Amino acid sequence: MRVLVSVTAPEPAIYMDTSQSGQNGRLGQLQERQHQYDPTFTDKVIAATGPNARPRVAQIMPSLVRHLHDFAREVNLTVDEWMSAVQLINESGQMSTDRRNETQLLCDILGLETLVDEITSKLLSSSSGVTPSAILGPFYRHDAPLLPNGSSIVHGLTPSVPWYDQAIADSAFITGRVLTPSGAPIPNAIVDIWHTAPNGLYEQQDPSQPDMNLRGRFQTDADGRYALYALRPVAYPIPDDGPAGKFLKMLDRRPYRPGHIHFIVSADGFRTLTTQVFDDRDEFITKDSVFAVKEELVVRFVARAGDEKARWTLEYDFVLGKEE
Ligand code: DHB
Ligand code: FE
Image 1: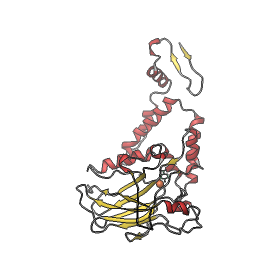
Image 2: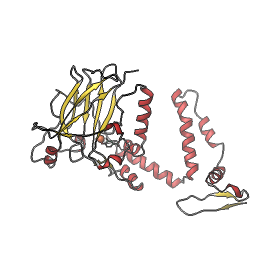
Image 3: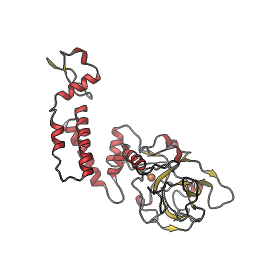
Image 4: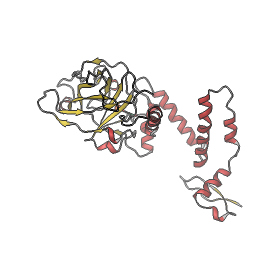
């Protein structure tokens, strides 16, 4: 005999075969649920892939289809629920421009960019002692100006800027070396850096900042050293006025990222490192909405004396793995 045993939301209705009274644990329920659906369906969809699909596509799609179908069966996904997910993805595509990548934000909230970043870096490099990577995020711009070591990436800062006082209080000299895993300096490496203004906005999000503000590329000297003036980073919410924001609200989550500075460090013969460093003063360091924080990337700025251009110093070395 089959009876409907539960209709209360959010737990979906489940049919249980009451003739098997020993089977009413969680696993038994799951197995029972799956039995109500066509057991040949997933294989049919997988088998539809043609012989000319590229090898990597043919390799990964069966797994994607299997996980998607198992997910839908496991939660008894309804048409309304699936359609609202389609709507969310459509809205993020419609909202995305070269200044805003909403679909990437959705992935980041789900931890997907951090996960594929970890997978990619482990696949591509086996060297140990290399600086850990962190996600690129949606606000990188190519072709930031190449600046001499010792110069500043802070532009247009006058007392009329609303965040002037905080920029002065957070002014920082950032320096360090780019090294091989055995500690040898790497000269002529390029250190590409970007971060937000104290209002939490990257320059392309903020018409009041000059073009390419708080971005720059620096070339290491013969000792592998880079040096520049910038600002201590502040915590800020990822853009939450679109589908990613709706999604966070649905999950009862906050949109904040801890203060961080992005880097891409590259040098001939070495694997390019995309990473971020996180200021240890930040309360959101354990609550990053996109899950990018790693212990080795948490840094401490120390008070700086005798330099009218900066109140803080950060010394941070990057270790690059050999290209394999
Ligand atoms: C994300 C990453 C960032 O570095 C940032 O500043 C904002 C959002 C992200 O991963 O979505
Ligand atoms: Fe960022």
